[in-house]
Image 1 (tube, rainbow, N blue to C red):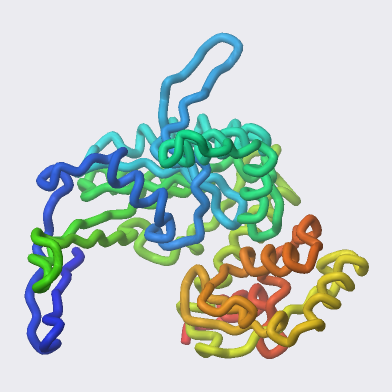
Image 2 (cartoon, rainbow, N blue to C red; image 1 turned 90 degrees about the vertical axis):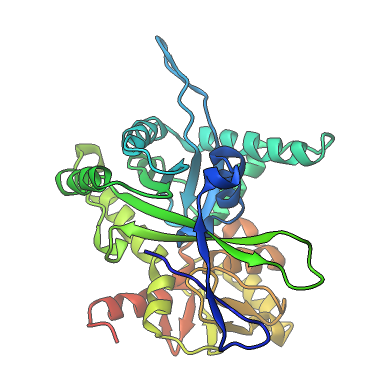
Length: 367
């Protein structure tokens, strides 16, 4: 249960409970409001997700068509597809719909995913400005590639989409079913995220009349660290090297949140960029020459944040994920097409890269 207290701005000793209020009571809708909130702020679900599309409905085969519309299809920084199903209130069928959507999404390849993203971005642009330029499939693919931690859109990783269920409440039957699915289908990863809307009360003097509201999101299943629910591909075509690739990508994508949770790097600590063996000698020389031309270009530091913990002195006021900072450095250095390595391997704290630092910590008791 989430409980919020409001603080008096004039006297922080004075508190007041913030009353929970339902979406239906406020006249809010799944698609118009909740979907938009998470499309604009997917980090509310606790990780670095890139929205690919909402309400995607272009499914077909040689003999049939489907009209299903997953609420949100996203791409994780580990290169997995994430299917997000939203509900206003509680719905005991939410997981059944989401499983169907995940099965449909498992047929995506990189080209179709890029086309879906291009259509979605173009639609959003033209909703704001009817004359806006469309996004090309090439530009969409580039945006998706840049989001993935190792710079790879791999169809094999799309075969096991992760499912995120988001609702105001989950009944016991739904949670029991999800837990059972997780135990008997080891390849399937399902998370339940609960949201609550709270009324903060009337605004301060001088602010517009009316109540103010906040929305909280929290994961209620699994209750332990989702990294422990390891993806273990069981299908024959996922055996061997591909399975290890998926596991490695997921571990690297979790490196930042592990470091943050365990306080392994102090606030403001300097980081070093080291490209040895990660790119060709020619690309490395281009980037290093560019960095050496200005001391601010190679000044990186850490801040406590579970998704965007990196700062760059060249652009004060901005915060980056490792992948986003890698992409920005290579783009400004004129070597953007070569940034296709795991970014957590390139940034070092006291001689140890982020991936190794998180892995060593995971092998020891949490501090």
